[in-house]
Image 1 (cartoon, rainbow, N blue to C red):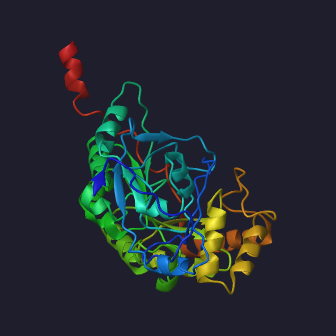
Image 2: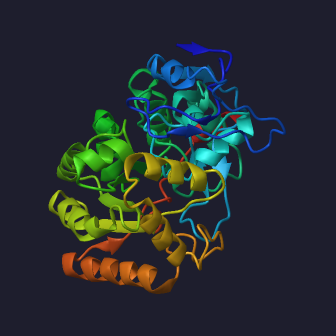
Image 3: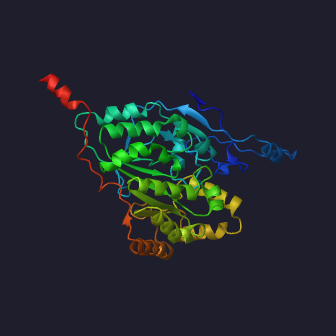
Length: 372
């Protein structure tokens, strides 16, 4: 239930495999000087204690944010503003680049990120105030740039829907990225906005293998449900794309062509991909996850990752952090380009084709007449 505190912290360090959770570790906050680790005191009871842990529940805490819009000027990202109704994401994707942001609120990027969520109850009203300000210049807002706007808690909190209701009234363009078939709940709003060229939806599909998806992104919709959602959105006239991300060398990269073909068959007409990124705490968390789920090939996968990052596990430089470098990364880029041409798909269109000219603050003309 929503509350006003962050609750009790989870043990830091290596953790048991929690059913329905992605991370197998809960690394300490990088900003804290002190850290704690579970250890056996010699009585041989640690493993037994951890085995008896109850299922890891999700806690919700109010985020008293004073703004809804987040701005960025990154040359690698196709939008300059975004809205995120939630901090943390219950989908539990082990590779999520947003995990390190949980450290800014004093929590771990590991299990905390997927089980201790913050939500912004006033996000819609805050957004309305910001886009109503004199001088505001509309450009597409990215919904789902940091955490999934349709993660499981959205079913009850409905914050994403409240944001879409504001954007619909203001004729404000929006792009959506999600791993959830829950986006179909808002088909009524999305259909209206699509008729005015104000929305694009992109479904992220990393694999078509249910078993692999379950351990990589345990609480996201199954791959088949995401494909079915593409079909429904496309049939309703809503522009749909697929994001094959991340491509993980030696894990799911062999599926790139199959993912693109399946998405195209279900209505996707634009596509993009991203090579696995391992910034900050994600590197060790991903290594822990590999050793837990794929011990036989963990070393090989990490070697391939380093091959695409000039010998490192991550290269944060703009222009290459999304695609990597070297023969392996170049081959992946060529495979993607070949499939794009074969399927007649466009690159991911986050900004260019949406119409910003229709934006209008409701009632602004009437208020101006009153002043006259």
